[in-house]
Length: 331
Image (cartoon, rainbow, N blue to C red; front, side):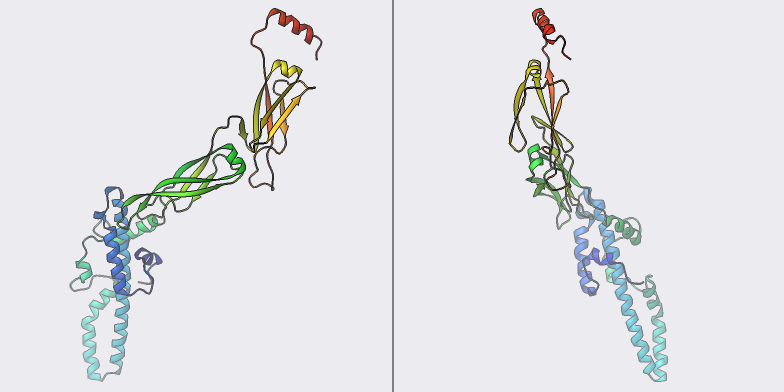
């Protein structure tokens, strides 16, 4: 039969040197836990798959131990016959021939010509009871056991200031866990997310194996996606920050001063005395944008201030004539 795959031992939570009596104890414990009748309809099919695989693993390991015992007995018998007197050899050969069908059946894995062993007659719910043979059940579960439960996805909202400076966010969520009885229970979990300076909207943080659990599956991951709260003044574009400033037409033509605060709280004041602010005018301040993730130390994007010139909605006739005289000849 050969050595069984390592997955047999993993399914029964035992090691290769586990004696038969402990294998039986591990099997009884697991079949009680994964008996399909103990599971709700939502997880019953998964429990059936696991029950089938556990039974198949137990039978394969038990068959291997029995085959080894038969080999040891046969070798010992042959050793005794080689040392016996001729008449004893004849008698021993006759007894061996009488037992030959039973040994052959045990070695081949076929049912022996005798009453089924107690372990077969005591089974209430076996791998062959749930549609299909044990080998098919084990093949199905072998591909199933490596499957992960679907990820548990949540959002974590950050302000633009938090994404600029970095911060720690405490997140609480509820995950499904599998109890010792194979049922699904809810568990409250708290994790800390360390937001790095410069993280963008859509950045994902994954806690492996800390998502939902499902019977027969590897635990899923908990995945948190960063979302950015809308800022009242700044808008992010890549690693740059954009600030829009409205300038009345008269100030755009004759001079203007205004001030604002950066995300870090520093106050910036600008004055426009000798220049005209035209529609679409943009002023760029290098290195005052968002930190660049993965860039050189201290690397940052730019701050771009876009000016929107506000024109008057109505002008009197006198105002129009005055503007014509003032602006006549201006390039």
